[in-house]
Amino acid sequence: MTENEEELEERDEPRDAEAYDDDMPWYVTLVKWLVAAPLCLMMAYLGLVFNEQDSSSKRHALHQVAQETTELQDITTLNPELNGKPVYVHGSPQTSRFLTDPAFGIRVPTVKLCRNVEFYQWTETRHTSKHKDEDGKEYTTYFYTHSKDWVSHPVNSALFKEGKQHYVNTRAYSKKSVSGVADDAHLGAFPLAKSWLEDIPCSAHVDPATVKLPEEIQPRSVAYGKYIYVGTAPPTPRQPRVGDVRIWWSYVPQDAAMGIIARQDGTNLVPIPCPELGEDVFKVSFPGDDREKM
Image (tube, rainbow, N blue to C red):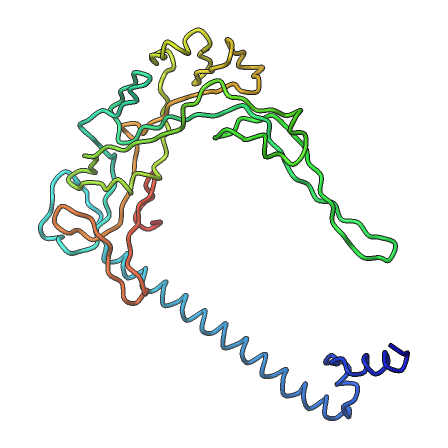
């Protein structure tokens, strides 16, 4: 291609807005900005007004629900007069059953029991570094570091980007974290759905001295604090080795508190219809804020 052809090709490329503005008379550009600027300000103002009106409407709707909600002083019996109305129920979830972890001989009267398992593993972290070449063009490079940490699942060191042969993960035990909730959990006279208990925090811990360890791990297990440590050999809790596993159990104590804002429907608690809000109102809180906060 000749130099003239290159010049023609460059001239045929689309020009940006600034190039067009340079070709326009100054008064055309001025008129354009005098029209565009107020229009942009008006649109921004209308957006703010709309958002404020929407927020105000939602606040009013929630305030209305709060005013209509009755706090139940006695949750052990149903008040037929409140059927179909918003109520606030607060108390401790209860169950008549025990939750168990048969593999370790654990049996606790609670609405939720968790077996928590952590693995001491090599982990890989990617870092980025930005540079500029001789022409000033920026580019990014990556490098990796490795550290030993307690993590909630085994780490496959074969997938490391670097140091696969140096940072090799093993595990001394293969049990996983599990949790369960009671089928018959209730808050006073109201049954509790399992899904409502999934997020309830387990604040109490099982004494590791009460745990019945499986025979295959007894010789290589040590109790320390709230944990049972398991290693390929008897572990040293303060100086864990890659592959060590630690297990502990947590549960919801019987005096735990929770609160629910919902509509009373017989013995059930269901969402409160709220057309003004655009959605139904149903709130489960742990440990259970007061009615106004919820």
